[in-house]
Length: 506
Ligand SMILES: Cc1cc2nc3c(=O)[nH]c(=O)nc-3n(C[C@H](O)[C@H](O)[C@H](O)COP(=O)(O)OP(=O)(O)OC[C@H]3O[C@@H](n4cnc5c(N)ncnc54)[C@H](O)[C@@H]3O)c2cc1C
Ligand SMILES: *[C@@H]1O[C@H](CO)[C@@H](O)[C@H](O)[C@H]1NC(C)=O
Ligand SMILES: *[C@@H]1O[C@H](CO)[C@@H](O)[C@H](O)[C@H]1NC(C)=O
Ligand SMILES: *[C@@H]1O[C@H](CO)[C@@H](O)[C@H](O)[C@H]1NC(C)=O
Ligand SMILES: *[C@@H]1O[C@H](CO)[C@@H](O)[C@H](O)[C@H]1NC(C)=O
Ligand SMILES: *[C@@H]1O[C@H](CO)[C@@H](O)[C@H](O)[C@H]1NC(C)=O
Image (cartoon, rainbow, N blue to C red; front, top):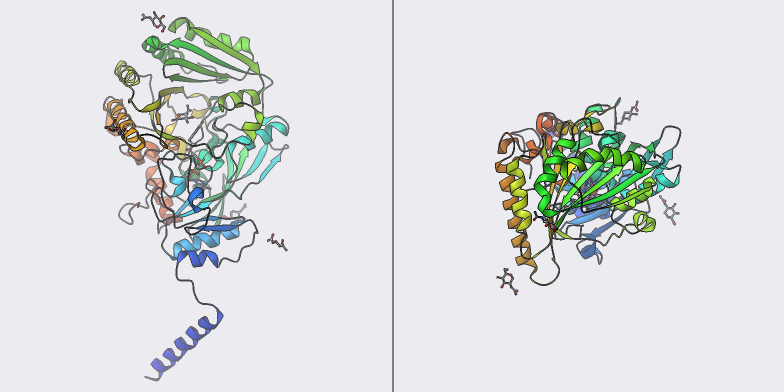
């Protein structure tokens, strides 16, 4: 009896003490507002902030989710405090870097998330002695490539679009015109720093927390924690880089795809990266790390097999000139400062093949490209050839799911989403894309359950997407998800779920 009284008294005293020190926050926003910042750069945007309406927008404008709040950490301490707030109030956390997710996941991918926008984490520090560059999670590819070029003519092997964020690109793979020579961007990441759902900071590399290091490179987008910093191996740019644009008329599609499948055999030079685009005509874009004469020699067997092109534009120049061309921007300044207001209405789908395309695949591609949706502004298919160094990483990672991939193919449709008959156009284009994809899945080698796809072209309508993206690595990824985020704080519609039977992914 006396003991019970004592306990009640102690409880009352504790409550009184709490009351005098500080009222505990009662919701996410007050918890975030109460963070004692360690950086003046940190700030909070809530649904009542004037900038909320524009800040929530991401590159793909057909998604407009409503986050509960957007927090911009200026330091790792502030990021950790914000994540702890979200965990306390049971709010899903979604990181955002460049905002280029195909599904708008940089905005939560559903209403009601805490978006952690890392745009204040802009460190770039390059050590020429090791060739390793330390990069803040909010840096975009354009400014990073420009910095490395202007500080000793170095390069890193990532994506081609200058406004894409380093985080999403490196965590999900990162493919570009250098991949056959240096591997995926994730293969050149030598260290990362990540804050988990409890606000704890992890360093991950080959020797320390190597399980996390394995998972983040290929499966790290948004599922395990907030990555704050990358260490990436850069390479000295070659003296000469040659680019080519080679065109054939559309009616040569079958012949050209078949020749392309024969040409990209394992003996294809790793200095060469080809992307073939099928739209109104066929356009083969070549990047070659070397001279024009050597590029022509590497290309000759394809031209001989496919038949003469209708025209060819070639340029022998520097790596930076090639990057500007592949980045589809007019000049160096536009590459250094990419237009962050650019956006589109678009559906992009991905399929990865371990063998050349079949005659049935080619029939479907021709059929759909010759019957585009009436309200589309653009439809195209891109077929890349992978292999090369992509198949020989220096150390295992979650991207091992996609070694020995032969072709990556990219189906795209765009429409006008901000004027005219927007929603009807969207509906028609989405239906076309779904039907095209489904036809290709029907004839996928090994059948539909075997479908494989690239996680950086993330697609919530993809059949068996967890298996398609992570394949044999999935059980280990789920075990690591359970270790680093058992409460599933870092969740969005396509995050990796904790181990089966414990929690759901959404
Ligand atoms: C125009 C365009 C061109 C592209 N070109 C290429 C290309 O050449 N090669 C290629 O490989 N891909 C390319 N992509 C795909 C691109 O790599 C992916 O969409 C990538 O995820 C985008 O990264 P982001 O940081 O810009 O996007 P975000 O939308 O900010 O993030 C993408 C995903 O990563 C997560 N994420 C972001 N930051 C962090 C972080 N700090 N820690 C943990 N998770 C994080 C997000 O939650 C989200 O799930 C392109 C996409 C577009 C729209
Ligand atoms: C923030 O700004 C104030 C005033 O400008 C300065 O005194 C303080 O040192 C800054 N704090 C940090 C963490 O940078
Ligand atoms: C390993 O990482 C932890 C944080 O995750 C860090 O405290 C420790 O210093 C690191 N050890 C080494 C040897 O780098
Ligand atoms: C293919 O298209 C080209 C240009 O569009 C045209 O000149 C040529 O006659 C066509 N060939 C066939 C076999 O239809
Ligand atoms: C794939 O297509 C998308 C458009 O859907 C484009 O943004 C991206 O750069 C393409 N990737 C490659 C490697 O061609
Ligand atoms: C919008 O497009 C749909 C389908 O093409 C059509 O049925 C409808 O009449 C259009 N509406 C307007 C206002 O143009």
